[in-house]
Length: 173
Image (cartoon, rainbow, N blue to C red; front, side):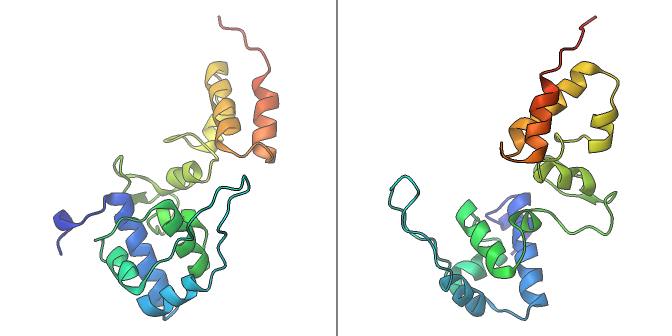
């Protein structure tokens, strides 16, 4: 199958490659990974009482994911990450030798460190966290703080600190 025949985009291809790599590193085949996923005790009801169907990934589904013939939804991503012993975001980023290496994204090639900081909620897309924190433009700093407060769960230190700091008033000369 050529890349033009894939049913997934760049991000899906990255997830597929990472799943394949991790399966190889752990000496798993699609059948053994499917069995690991089948053993996960999944809820059948949400906290609000809504019934949900537990997600399963069969051997064929995993083979199709690795081949780029099947898209990975959020439930699949979480199950695959859990069964492979990694964080879901680990499956989402192309492995890179350094933070300065370029990786492919649906938006184009990007610096691996910036992509990682963005998908982990530490910075806005395309900006280094250190630059954001030390910028001399108060509107830029305020925008970054608001982003951090929205991008992180409200119970995290990052979100709480960002909300507190964003309430400071800046002069808009």
